Length: 219
Image (cartoon, rainbow, N blue to C red):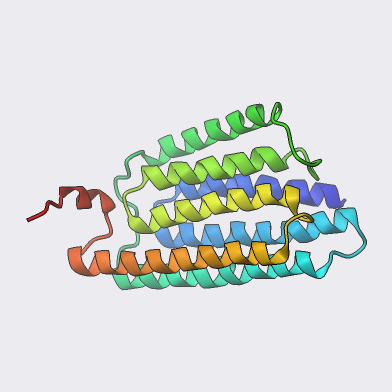
């Protein structure tokens, strides 16, 4: 029962990757990321329950940190920046939405094929863990390089971190809680700084299209 719940969460995570690649509405994309992060925050508890009767404080601290930062605080910051910029759609990305979804699907298939021969430091709680981690990481990179708006590029960076978070579940018991919370704090600081940068890009240039910044020249 618990094993099927873990597998179901990981399948939903992959589908949410494709959903983010398919949508042009940035607010919807941010909320989809928050939902994906909520599902991933439940994984450490589910994995802990699979190994023991009740997970320890270490596991709950990681889950609580992920929920607080990636489900509530970071999406709130991004939505606030979005409302300030008054830009709500990703228009004319470098790679179209249909092509992005097709590339995302190819990445998922390739991740499953590549994960079969990849050695692991410890036994994975489920066979889906490694391929889903790789698929999420590379789909995040695809979003990062294929979108023009700074907000969706920030989301791509966050999806990459979600992929790393999934891979980190392989070392859940070996990683000290302070290290995990330190990584989450670094993530928050990085997004906070990027939010400030995006705000100033919008204020100075009246857009959030990072592609137009290539036209800047030194005077």
